[in-house]
Length: 121
Image (cartoon, rainbow, N blue to C red; front, side):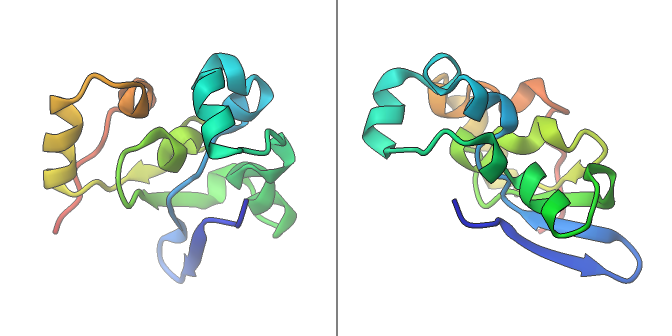
């Protein structure tokens, strides 16, 4: 998995765009994500490829990630939110509306982390 886009800011620390799958997803992918999705996506279930481990390999710590900007709220873009509990999550209001209207596995775990924070446009 490629490293989620990141940027270190002078004032606000590290910013991630998406988190990809989280360490818990990658430890037990069939249980966390569903065997059908794992087979479909051909995901490589290696926790060392999580955003958390990649951030650490770059010399940062989880607490250094201060902001996360998910492109959208599918769990393969937000599964790693739980790995960065100190980060503020910035979500476009339109995506929150879509998220709130769905009850599918794709969105199932996002609200269990910090509850999506609404960022500005």
